[in-house]
Length: 287
Image (cartoon, rainbow, N blue to C red; front, side):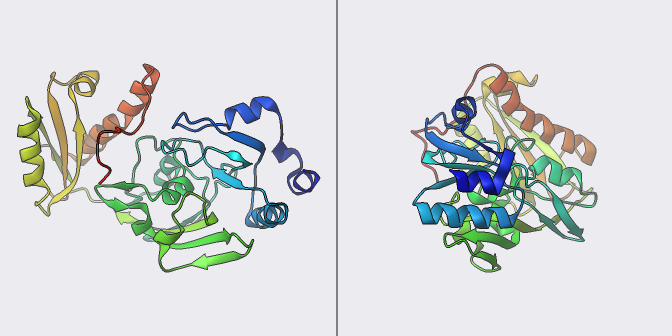
């Protein structure tokens, strides 16, 4: 691995403790890293891909390892930690250019009149590169819908700009490594409002959700079960938090709406602190 040491210097390690840390992500699937490198620019990644290609070695890019699909689990490969590429390069009206290691929380912290609306459960650790690589999806669409342009290093080691068919490059690092993103931003609105609905049965809640999904004024719907509801001080029941694009909801103060959404995001951290593991329900169809 002398070639890698020459490229990365002290930002290269084969230490067993480091390999143990990077052997898995939030999926809890165990892998086997050969070594870990920490690139700081596209040129280093270009050299890394060229090196790996010449030597027939796989690469596993990752951020903070919050993914639950095992995409950052190395299979006898080099782990490429992208977190040092964490600069916000440009903000211009409804566009923003960033490196892949920037977290979603830091992206939105830098914005005043706009926001990046695709918010995962752990915005403080989820990186934009990881979010786009898995094409994370929520009520507001897929991550790729909010990307105007990508700059990637492909499997040949070439640095390529991608302006069309963005979704084809959202394959968890299987066909490229993202080194720069131009994001589309959503203008913040102070007219947002929210209503919190409570239900005793799943059937009653499902009926209401079907009704709300047909309402064009609905921006997003968040669901909490009995346990999570009591965790944040609500009644022991099912709840849905419905955010509206206008003043249609009962809660009309936009700051209060922001606080409620932040509370919903914090539930994930509370569950993790209590020893729960965030994973996919194997009995629930992923549609």
